[in-house]
Image (cartoon, one colour):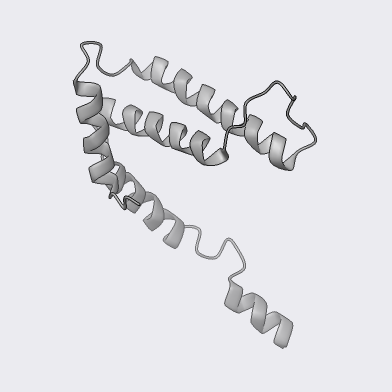
Length: 116
C-alpha cells in the first residue's frame, strides 16, 4: 500500500502528464471530465445502494476505482491551476473547525443528552 502525501500525488500526476505534448486540459475541459467522473461514481453508488441494479451486460466496476478516477482528475485540475491541494485542504478544515464547529451535534453532546 502506498501512503503518498497529497504533495507526492500532485507531483506524480504532474510527472505523468508532463510526458505528453498535450499537457493538461483547459479548466473548462477539466471540469467536464470531473463531472463525467462524478456521474460514473453516482452510477456505481446507485447500483450498490439505490434502486437500479446493474444489467447483466454491464462490467463490474468498483466505487474505489471510480473514486480513484475522480481523485486523479481533481489532482490534474489543481495542478493545471497551480493549486496546492494540501494548502486547500488545510484552509477548508480551518473553516469547518471554526465557522461550522457548532453546526452539528458533537458525539459528546449527544451522549450527554442521552445520559442526562
